Length: 177
Image (cartoon, rainbow, N blue to C red; front, side, top):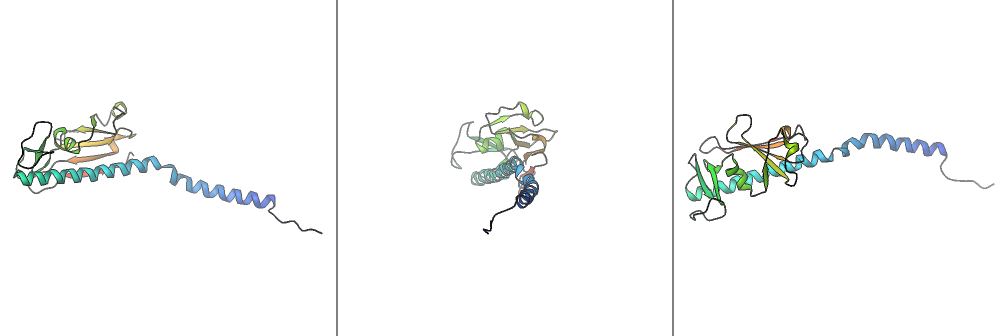
């Protein structure tokens, strides 16, 4: 008699059930990739804000304006060079101001002005949008992705320097990403 080898139907069903259980427990981990991508993009924007503000602070030191509470520096020229309004960046104690003429201009990125609450109506051809002030806080810029589902809880907040020798505050809010 010839002996047959292989899997029985019951063994195949058991293996399929086990694979189904594993897939059901692992799938939620991989389903949230868009949220993870948005959070990573916000962290990248935070790093860009830190780098840009440090660059402008260096230019302010070279120009001798790091202790002034309201001044400007040239973003694309040397410390002693004069520049036109398109290259001038508003600074507060050497760091970019929390305005469109400050940190948003420093980033040199095409951003659209928009409200976080109305982010669904923002220009989707731009990757990033910003809201100046908001909630009565002068000197604060909220930067968010135009594809964020809840821009009020998925943004980077830049708060300008509060005084001489104080760094700007940059925070990431990811609750709504």
